[in-house]
Every structure is written in C-alpha cells, then in structure tokens.
Image 1 (cartoon, rainbow, N blue to C red):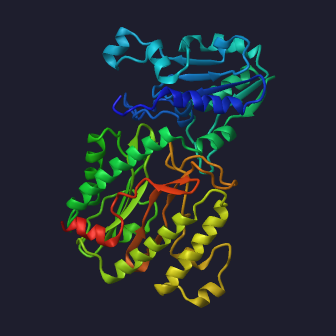
Image 2: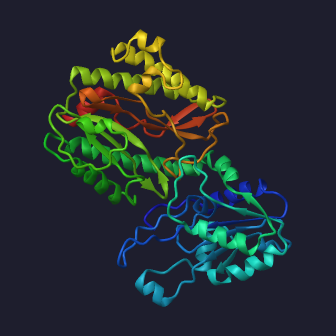
Image 3: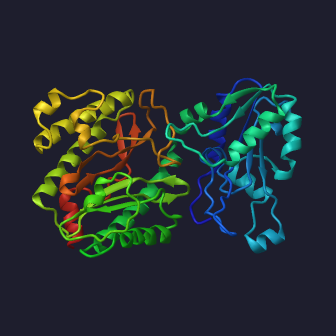
Length: 429
C-alpha cells in the first residue's frame, strides 16, 4: 500500500461507537464498492466505500463487514468476509489480504472468506431481530448507477422480509462527522501534499501555459508523494472560466492579465484535502484584482472565527452573507438600494457569491455530517467564500480546511501561501 495506514485501534473504536448506537439484537452489514467497468476489459480505479473503510480500514474490493453486538457467541459479534487469495490471483492481480493480515489491519478477530457469507448470515439472522442496512443518504447524493450496496441490500431484504429494517446512515453521519486525532493526522498529510503541488505550480505558471498543464503539475507532485491523485475532479479555470463554479474541462490557455482559480486537493489514505487558490498569470495582481481578492480574504478570515462549537450552521451562513454584503458594497458591485429591496430567500450578495461557505470534509470531499445540529468539536469544515464577476472575467475563491476545537480551531492549510503578497513573492522568487 502506498500510503501510511492508520492504527487498527481507530477502527475498533469506530465499530464500538456504531455498535453502541444500535438497537438490541441488531445486525448491521457494510459492503465494499464494486470495481466499475468502462469498456472492453477496462475498469476504473477502485475506490473503497467510505463507510466500509471507516469501520474496517480495509481498502480492498469484495469485502463485507458484519456487526452483531448482541450475538450469543462472542465470535459472531464482528465478522469480516474477504476475497480468498490464491497463487493465480497473486500472479495476475497481486495477493489479497490473508486472514492474519486482515485481523492486523482491522482488529476484527473473526475473518471468513466471502464464500461463507450467505450461510453465516442465514445462521445469524435466526438470532437477530433488526437488520441495519446502509445506503447513501448524503443530501447531494445522486446514484443513477446501481452500487454493490444497493444490489446486496435489495437481495437481503427480499430474503428476510419479516425482519425490521433500520438505517445505518444516521448513526454514521453522527459518528463520522467528529474526526479523531488519527484522522486529523491523515487529513494533514493530504493537505501537506496539496501544498507541495501548489508550491510547484507557483513556480510553473506564466502566460501561455494551458490549464491542463497546471493540472499535470499538481498530479505529478501528488503521485510522487504517495497520494493516488486528486481527491475530486480538479478545477483549473483562468479568466472567465473562473466564474463557472464547476468548470472541469481545464482546456484553455492562461493569458497575461488573467487570474487562475485552482480548486484542487490531494487524496491520502482515502482522506481528502480541498483547497482553492487564485493566482495572477503574470505573477502580479492588478489593483482591481487585488481589491476583490482581499475582499474575499477578509470574509474568509472572519468566517473562520465564526466556526465554534454550539453555533448553528444556518446562522453561520447567514452571518457570512452579511460579511460578504459589506465587502460587495465597498467594491461597488451592489448598492444600498439593492440591499434594501433584496429578497431574503435570495439576498443581493448572491448575485456575486451564489454558493455556500462551508461543508464537512473527511473521507469524502463533501463529507457526511449533521447539518441541523450545532457545530461540535472535532468537526472539520472547508471555508470557501468567493466573488465571481462575470462581466470582468474575474472569479476569486479562497478555501482552507478547518478543524473545530473546544477553544479555537486548527487550520490544516495555514502553511499554504494565501495572502496577495505571499502569492506574488512566491511566483516571482
């Protein structure tokens, strides 16, 4: 494995936290992702299901985790089903986990081969009363393709129609939203790799380079430092492209006088970094570009200070909107009349700042979390205000990843150049 693994004790704690929230006689199942086909005999790179990884640490396909805390036989309380390795498999694709390796990695003592799953489940379902099935209940989820989890859930529901079905997602959203110290270490590694990529790009950019060349510079640095690449599809948008929020074509030439918006982050050990920086193609911002940049920077710094335990995320976003309104007034992009007549459902500032300021981040870039409950210590958020002036071909967004502490915060990207002077100095060094 190319990345540094986290200790099995983390996954033991995670499983205990989930088990403690289950109803009596509940049995829970978690499935790895499929390897998705492309065409001919091609496949996409394997990406483990985040919940399965969170509870086991296994980064391998054809894996099932079974939790049954109240099982009569202690050996049945945690079982990991894994693909049996073989000499032939090792020759063609590399050896899979042995039972001993799986126990060492996960802390699960009872490891069975995948072929034993149906018979073992059938035996335990006679003892269980409630079946916990997991599915993707992220607020942005859209799954037109049937996942392994969907397929297996449907099969098991049909086989055991008289068992009560419970949802695993609410428990996972709660416990996954608070990151452990071990998880923060892994996220910091992802952010450090992201910094290395950005430092490389600062020395590379000049008029005439292509957006995809910048993407390649990031990828080079990410891969050589143990990342499997981008945590999400990168946005490298110069000039007007920076005003397209989900611009991912990365196909244009970067021209003198333009600003490049780069929304990129490295993956490390399945954890994501999510950074946005804006740099001038020429190495120096114009006065107008600097004014807009500093306005976004000011909102960002004030927004970070608002993220505290006990704060409502709804109120937080409302306060950030007020901060942005003041900056847009100062930039003369809106006026007092716009504010006075604004529709509170879509305030005046939304013309130039139309997206949210923060989202949870962790194993997923848009990680699961409790949007309707107050912020808690251990939550990790992005903070990413932006101003997009389409008529000026100028888009500025700045983004760091922030760990909420009891008395303050940790900025996982505090060491990455951010202020105007830092950017210009690094580009002209």
